[in-house]
Length: 415
Image (cartoon, rainbow, N blue to C red; front, side, top):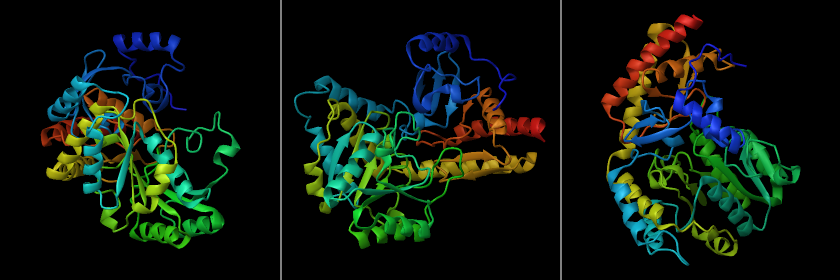
């Protein structure tokens, strides 16, 4: 385990909030945002954000490269998005049925996403991936779902990375393969046999603490082919990457279109929303399953999504994220070479992962992100990061000043 004793301790307001939380919240916080997994000087609580900058509970400001773990693609508190959400809230958030904005948003998604003939809405990514799997089973009358070993598709028993509270029966109809390995994919399809309902695959391999991998064209085509041969559903989990890589879906550049896709994160620029889009083959199945939630038709998030998606379509938001990511990546690469620090930068530039060589315990990674944090830049040591349309060249250059000093510290401490 990493020895954190030489790390600065949390700041006063944050520490007080953590102490209060520990008495009323199991573990102080649940899930991926629990700062106990981060270096000790990382804040747990935040008091505000705007553009690409966040402020912690002690008032410290950081250029942020996590974007709330992905939802902020246009920037925190984007004025146009917030105005649309506020106007919807003023009319009423939930009722006995949805606001007309639901139809507007479904029409926009169908017009934007080439494979989509219809859309349904939920509140988070797990809702959407689970609905996709359920629709695939309903539409095929089969049970087996192919999943890539180690991939993350949500936090309910069929897919959660933790086995606490999970039974063998919850996973009984999952068949694993290795991402980007066509041979294991075909073997999994053969093992599923006549019970093969669907294949769910992430837009790219973004496993935590691992080098990221873009799908190879051969793998993407093979995924489509094994589903076509078996009459199974190809499901793209675009929860994390959707609207950051391509407005029509992350596999659109490969010429591979899914039967079903799951979306969330950037869809409404921070407002809680998820969606499933699908083709006409699975339209009837989508009417047969029962999925619902008291807040799933909230109008504000849908109004925010209308603005967000139109901006992704009509502006350079997506290429801008990529350009800023490339600027950051090139700068870190040059700095690492200058300091003699061996590291890898993988994944798409707008969703970068930085991992250090020979760093199983993440000591180098923790040193790097802590040194950057002390200089006003929020990075992550083991999760892919995110660029937004709010990051400007001057923000990247400010961050590179911090990473240069941080890499110098890694070199000093680890050689």
